[in-house]
Image 1 (cartoon, rainbow, N blue to C red):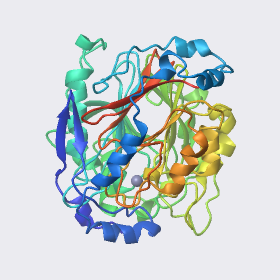
Image 2 (cartoon, protein in one colour):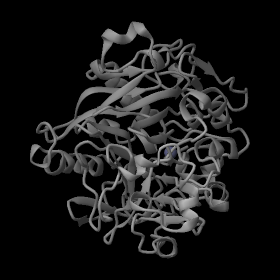
Image 3 (cartoon, protein in one colour):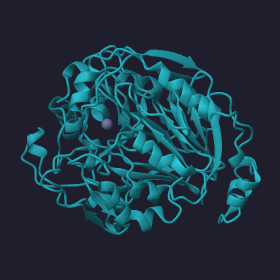
Length: 493
Ligand SMILES: [Zn+2]
């Protein structure tokens, strides 16, 4: 389905250096191509050559009222104070005074979790792509997807900058890191906009050096829209020279060698969701929920893969229907990042229906994992699934992660100009209508032609950075543009 021309462009986006970070700036547009419903837009997108500048300015202007981080320091108003009153632990917020709102790009800080949602360039030959980099309290680095073919140089450049300039002993981290050292890669699913850069990033003279593992759902149940060459390249590495890094959460019958057709059998079990720390074999037999140790007490927990969702003790499969059984997005991993009282949800391109044939995995997640992992308070920051397209963020999932309780929450999303139509108006409305997010907002790396607007929308045109404060008692959200927009919040717990 995907036009290979989208995968063959070099790195053509302009890069603007801001402080110590390379902020990637959109140059052109491409198509989605992630599902049957997006095929037309993918074809249309290949003809797009604009950068949709008009979509950016209103969003930023409407939502950046020179905020001074009221969530961290003090109630901004009487109304805010009233909302704060019933909180279980107000002192958590009070203890998270992180000082004045930063006016420069947030740099990873020892003791804190920093998540950089990267703004990947569209390129002259338009190309989709999403990737994020998490830096844990001790400098542990996790790539969350790696973008498309041609995005490897962009991801590699930021990895190098993090390792050589930010995550250093001089800045309080425990040790110097290798120039291209990465601890973990977590692959949400196998569409090219998430794994297309895998082979080029991990091979050759400037390959990143993954030291712990590559976590994915397993080579099973591969669905529609997966590009054969990208899948085979990743599979060949994980079953060959990088087999020592291969961490699979689910298993099922395989027809043999690496190919999409050999990996279409459904998962029969996802025991990898219950092996404790994923890099530590000695604790596997206890069958604790799986996680990555991010240092400093922070964790990335794995609670879903391939439609199987965990209630903390066992996983329950979603019975995919006969018409939707090939939908790849629905197989996305589901993870939570926890640091102190801070909670962050990431679920790749997970679907909540919204289009015919799209399985409603978001509601299944809420049913199975809601009580154990989300509770009545939900999350602080939610990664909106699937580039804020209409299959993302159904009403049940929004209620699960951001209940309408007056507390401040934030939504971030990975969009570049190639995702024509993103963000979708109905998705923005479900998140932000009725002041559901309190004083928080929706922060996107970019917006595409046809994308909707909303009073709560911030379009960065650059990376979106989330960083905890006070060891997870509060957090910043930043649009890391030339003149950064930064706001501070208390956690909801
Ligand atoms: Zn995607």
